[in-house]
Image 1 (cartoon, rainbow, N blue to C red):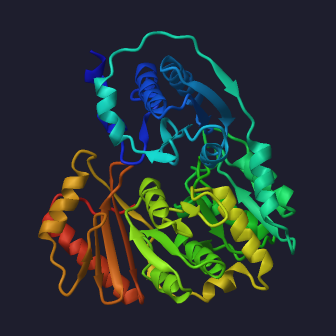
Image 2 (image 1 turned 45 degrees about the horizontal axis):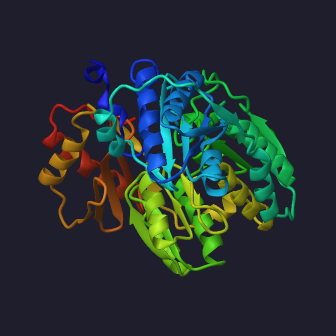
Length: 458
């Protein structure tokens, strides 16, 4: 009976995500916990770390998850309210390589979800669906768990890595998500003059939505950087695995440029591969090669980037959305707090401002990530249809994830989002004029192929 009303769409390409009331009810989460528990037991492990972000539905979901894990005979180590990277950190340094983070990331506040690591590998929601559907109802069992405070260890390891040469002033904005308290404490313990706004976790997100990839969510941080004459500002997403950066004069920095700064820094220490997603600037591989690295383009999604980092033993990986994975002297997971500390260190060690560092990169004209709202059921088919019917003269095509069309020095991308009912676009060129041209070519194709689609990009 219960399976008929279960929404299969919660099992996604990177994780599990859905509406906290209607999709992620007690029975569903408990059963997911049980299926995960069985996988853990299958690997001869008997425990798992569980953490959650600041969403209002966290405790309810945690209770159901713990019940399911316990029913499978797995011991639960509760980390409490932590950023996602703390769960990853636990799986890398603790007593078990298994962890589940309860988070809706940057989805609307009534959504929630699970990010899962089993035996040190990211697990996609899709691969759990069959096991879930084949699983019968679960017997009641007593709930048991142990609470663990991982913060002192995490802080100590970060502080052992760095010594501050020059004190600079930093503003942090966690958007009332899970990263605020930890980030503030880490930056202060590092010796930075630290000002935090929207630090307190609040699942209503009263000040702005915790998604630093959208310009409107950075307004408050920009103002605070300017008002305090700070050297740099960082914004975190709701669960602390994505970072945005603001220069001393209040401009936001493209994730492309963050990855460039880090690539240059790390490749001077060690040559190796750098992984980036299909949404990144074409200037990034050029810079990686210039500093002796190997540039590898990969599908979007933390799941895909992490796999590629392992496969190529990469120095680091990065995504246009602000997920950055440092694998040189760190653990190769996306950790916005650690990344922000490294970026702050680079700025504090350099005898130049952030904005002058960025001015050294070749100037291009690009759009942020643009979205078109479409039906969740048809988004992948729409991309296939576009690929079949599109007309682009003299274009080079990359179809690793959606389609990336390069014409001369311009490119455009269309792919289906794996986390929401959207088509995702991005465009880049070397002049305003060329940027308009490539965007127009895409729009012409979209109008031809999908005459009913409203092209109101957001």
